[in-house]
Image 1 (cartoon, rainbow, N blue to C red):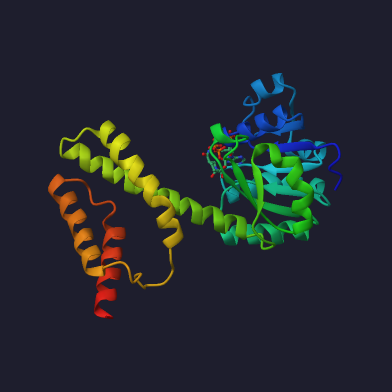
Image 2 (cartoon, protein in one colour):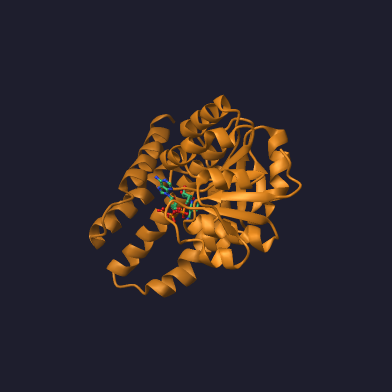
Length: 275
Ligand code: FVH
């Protein structure tokens, strides 16, 4: 793989594909674009990108092909006709999917002599290419070492292992943390709103500083065991969780979080029973 020209082809011009292309153009890369539905490359072409007429055309134009499509099925569907052209080349797949899908994709590509670097984007379109953005990669370390500098403009490259499924694993796990946080904050705001509180003031003066204080503690304390740290009092925790459930019921807020809260409650009760 010759990375000296840093010619990158991007398959997929959704919100994320466009953001990736923009950051790479900004960094002076030679960028070729393909999208299933034509007409999405306009502004990027005006900035120097070339729009390919087919997937085969795009794959042939790049030292590196990046797929950023909806899901695993769309990646397979898009690549299938271009496999002969992709043979002997590298695909970086930044499409979200499951661990098994990533492993199976690597096996499928390998049969055609295509190297896969699997990825997971830890950014949203507006933050691509900014300081906080990072990209999880998994696959052969030497491949990562060659690709990382080429794709660094989209976000800090972070290798998580040889197993092609690991980028998806860490991506999905991190998203689970984010969605849990999102569900919790939505629930918090719904409670305050339902009981007549000032949501903006609550967010600014209570929720934000509370979440900032607790986030490092929650991440450090996240644990797969059923144990409760000695310094925590599970009886107090169980009562506290019951209070949240009661407050939600009184406010008439849908108990969307009840499953997680009850699971935590039972963890406290089991810890109490084991003492
Ligand atoms: N946007 C985000 O915030 C998240 C951040 C973390 C990473 N995700 C993942 O990135 C992948 C792409 O997401 P996206 O935001 O670009 O998604 P859309 O704007 O919906 O664009 C989808 C593109 O996929 C194309 N597409 C869909 N189905 C097919 C198909 N069967 N064959 C070929 N292409 C297909 C679609 O094309 P079109 O509808 O314009 O013709 C778009 O290019 C995704 O995995 C996120 O989970 C983003």
